[in-house]
Amino acid sequence: MGGGKATGGVTGTGGVSASGGTSGTTSSGGAGGTLPGNGGAPSNGGTASSGGSKASGGALPGTGGATSTGGTTSPGGSKATGGTTGGGGIMGTGGTGAGGGGSNAAGGTTNSGGIMGGRGGSGGAGGKTATGSTGGTAGSAGTGSGGGSSGGSLGWAVRMANSVIARHPDPDTIASSSFSWEVGYTMWTLEKVWRSTQDPKYLTYIKKYVDQHVNAAGNVSGFSGGNLDNFLPGYAILLLYEQTQGTQYRKAADTMRQAFATYPRNSDGGFWHSTDKPNQMWVDGVFMGEMFLARYGHATGDSTAFDEVVTQMTDIVNHCMKTDGLLLHAYDESKKASWANPTTGLSPEVWSEGLGWYAVLIADVFDFLPADHPGRPGLMTILGQLVAGLKANQDAQSGRWCQVVDKCTLSDNWDESSGTGMFLYLIKKSIDQGTIDATAYGPAVTSAYQGLVQKATANSDGSVDINDCSSIGVQGSYSAYVSKPKQVSPPSCVSSFIAGTLMVENPGAATP
Image 1 (tube, rainbow, N blue to C red):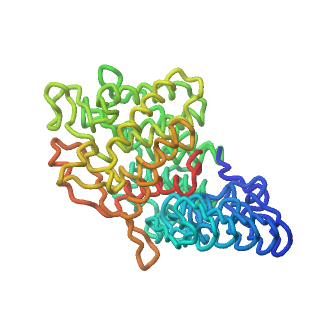
Image 2 (tube, rainbow, N blue to C red; image 1 turned 180 degrees about the vertical axis):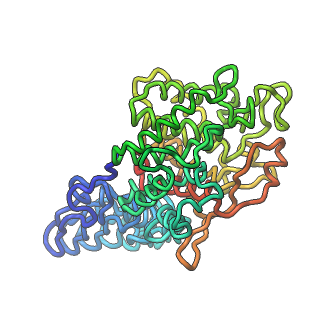
Image 3 (tube, rainbow, N blue to C red; image 1 turned 30 degrees about the vertical axis):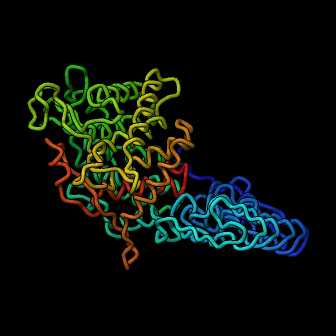
């Protein structure tokens, strides 16, 4: 908790490799490190040099393991893939692709820019019997070209996170309301970037935000317990409590936790989205409230918080999940809302970002929920149903998901970036945690990342924007959802973009 990535031994430099001797000592990027290394340098002339193995921890941008260019039977580095997979790490721009030279150059595993992005490698340029899967056959060039090469050496996630801080030196300016779900979601995401990079500026920024709302006595300015959206900033407060054990942060979190004691509910116990929307349950709100409660239970040992989380996550599924595993946007027990079906009380469509909130929540809830909690198996079943539904409804051409998720074949529907980032986050994190099959779902991650970064714009000042976003409330018809204006870089989409790309660019970075 709170320690982030260990740096172990020496990271980033590989070991020592021979430049004309017999073999060259290989390296795995630092004995204890989890940050990426650069592999070892290649051996340029030994009899059977392997060229230095790839950096085993590396998934951030980098050069991966260099390929061996000489040696009688050099396979071009123990993985001639320029990093984790393909050319130069997930967001790298090179490595030289499939090992060039050597009478039996293996060609590398893939030559399409790693999992995605980058410029691939240059193909297998030599090798009498090159066998690289995509990297040139028998000496053909084969120039792989993944999408998103303009992510740059930092990767898309870090560049976007830096854009947030540059645009909003005062975090209270991120949204019109400073103590709001938009800012809370931004802090949720920036914590993941901090844990990934170990750069203290992200934690400093989060602390600045929290300290502008929590005073020395533990009073919370801006908090209202009448809307689930208002609870999400408490997630960042709990981070500060975990890191410092400051009593003011604990008192502030306790105040927010106690607000649930009198929070209004439907007859089956489901929380209303807000006091001014009686009887309505929104998928959005389940994330806002239960993300805070899950971390609160973990940070304080309050087991009743976990029980509430399971209750709320299960209740919304019982009402809103369709047979394909996807969730409709909302449910109104009274059936009086303008968008509600008069018979079922359900909203008509599966909205991308709305479903995304549940996706992000179920991706993270297992970080906090005790392994022996009786509700855990049921939530794991829900996760399996949801990812199966997402895979089935992913746009085959773009790799993204549409504004109305399960109607992507309709001509007026459009690919929406915020939900795409959220679904990418869920699927990749679930693969990394071993809860879903990598072979079955890996291609969905690859195409989703490629599709998502195609929606990003790298500006001349170094900032990044994300296009084709939608952050709206519940709508009453399909046409109302798809006719909403496409937004550029609203806070929710910015954070979803960071979360999704970070999971690919630095696997495993998202766990507190």
